[in-house]
Every structure is written in C-alpha cells, then in structure tokens.
Length: 293
Image (cartoon, rainbow, N blue to C red; front, side, top):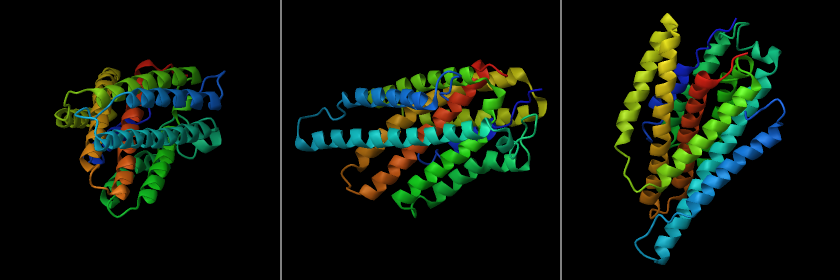
C-alpha cells in the first residue's frame, strides 16, 4: 500500500524562511551519465541564449561591455553551482532510494517517515535558517560547501520517490521540469518588464500552500493535494522568473562595488534560490503526472 510521504511542507517552507530575505533523469534504459549529459545540455543552451542578450544597451563604452561580460559570468556560476547541487541531490536520492536497506533507515515499509526520517525531512529547513543567519560571517568557500551539503541532505529527503514512482515517470517529469525551468529563467533574465512586484504575492502564495499542506496532513484529501500541486507549479514557476531577474539586478547594483567576496556569496544565494524553486516544481509535477508503482 502506498502512503503519501509528508515532504511537501518542508520543501514549501524553504522558500518562505530562507529566500524571502534574498528574495532522474534516470530511465530504465538510460544510464546516469547520459542523464547528467542532458541536464548539462539544458543548462548550456540557457547560458548560450543569455550570452546573446546584452543587458547594458545605453552605449558601447568599455564599462558597459565589462558589466555585461561580468553578469554573464556571474549567471554562468549561478547555474553551474545549481546544476552541481542538483546532480548531488539526485545521485544521493537514487543511491538511497534504490537500496532498501539504506531507505529503511529513514522510512517505514509504507514509506511514511520514521523518527530519523522526520529529522531528515525538516533538516533542509533548519539549514536554510542557519544559512540566512550566518551568511555574513561565512566565506564564499564555506557557503558553497554548505550548499552542496544541503543538496545531499535534500537527496536523502526525497529518496522515497524511487520507490513510490517508476523510473521512467521520474525521468519524464524531471525532463519536463528542466525544460520549463530553463524557459522561465531565460524569460526572467531577458524580459524588460520589471517583475519585482511579484515577490510579495508569490511569497503569500507559498504561505497559503504551506497552510493548506498542514491542513491536508489531517484530512488526507486527494482533491486538496491536487489543488496544492497545481497552484504550487504556477507559484514556483513565477518565483523562478522572479528570482532570476532579482539575481541579475542584484549583480548590476553591486557590479561597481568591486566586492568580489560578496559577489561569490551572491552566487551561492542565487543558486540556492533557483535550486529550491526547481525542486518544488519537480515534486509538484511528480504528484500530478507521476506514475506510482
């Protein structure tokens, strides 16, 4: 019997309590190396399209060109850091989820979390709290190590999906999420429309999703879960575009400051923001379209 694991609340609350401040592929016939190659291709295409877009269009001064080049390099670092984190997450999730002995450490036979499972499920939320409080004291290298550790623990948290859903279904949903994410992030980067006003409404939407998820823990309604998943996809799609533009604007505002250490930290913060949006979209789409074992 399949019991819906209670992971959605901890994933949703990450967006509220960590990022408001900063405003697999694995098919039965597809090896992980090929899956990683597809992810890299999607990231590469997005970066290439961004490279064709000039942010500074007011003139051809050397300063404007330098800012454009710096922004592209910054965004490449953000996407590169995020993609490494994503690979770590799904590598850990696959390794644990396909090993019954390891999965039993965190999950009961019906896939509901045991005591350690609850700890792992809410550990990412605690880590985001800690990251927000310590970011000013952390070095860029320490912040990067923190992010990769966070990604591995997130992998432990979602490892159950490799038991609950078949591999082909997970691969298909991951590919759909990757394509949608790339398109939304590219639009957020290239649009001339100021979407900074979306932030407060999107965060309110996330809060609403958290409240609905908590209620659904007690009534176990499939209809409510369906609504949460549909709205969640829309909200985190909006956050993907919003966070991408915010990352871009933050760099442009700080580009003249010359504080490279802070810009390196901003890379990690941006990667974390986009990473959480991706994971939430993936999980919501998996609930909607995933084929359960």
